[in-house]
Image 1 (cartoon, rainbow, N blue to C red):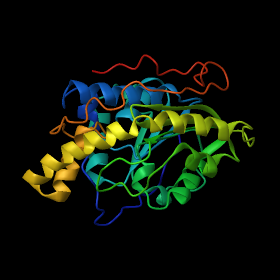
Image 2 (image 1 turned 30 degrees about the vertical axis):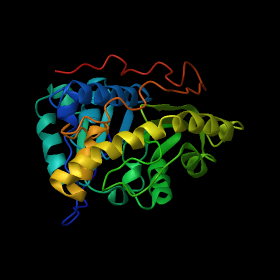
Image 3 (image 1 turned 90 degrees about the vertical axis):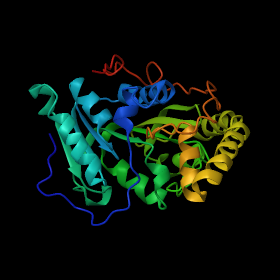
Length: 295
């Protein structure tokens, strides 16, 4: 499996704490658990080939699940604490699973540019970048020819202090559309889900797909904003503006699995969806993670 001889160790990185493993296991509440499992299992189910790079792996839950399914999985993250947690979880796995996993404390720019993978996964990472085009192109460069890119990202505006970009489906297509054919593009519970195959042929109907998904996603925006504003107002009064925004944001169900202090947005935009089917069965093509289990 791809290996890194040295780690690029970021100094004094400002990292928002993450509890995605606990969320996945249901330890942060039933609703937070459901949402975390839904997105993470979906991402794992899109993986193809034998090797996977999990960019922004946090505490490593997706990387661990992929390794259990037989993939050789590399997870990278800028949080030293998250990588330490992930490595501790790795040691709890069967030896045959643990040996298929590598966790690296690094940023994406510090990863060996020559490493390529059959699948590259980015779950709720892109919105934390100010230079989204630069970041996504770098991520896509690690996908082998014929390989798969899997992206989940909030649709449009999500209130959280560390979100630096507002992203719509067209934004992603404008960056990767020349290299990738889109298999799946959908909006589910206010998150864009996208998979693409690196085949060098942009789909002729990509723009139409983006418009349809954007129209569908936009139907949920007023309710999302109303829920967020209601939650944010009460939390700001008690905790101050920045902390109140963070706590309110947790209540609208972000995928990082923060503790659900605020529940005001729990009912937002549930269930609306547009699915674009490309190759095979909705882009799944016999993937191996559909039966992911927890311990």
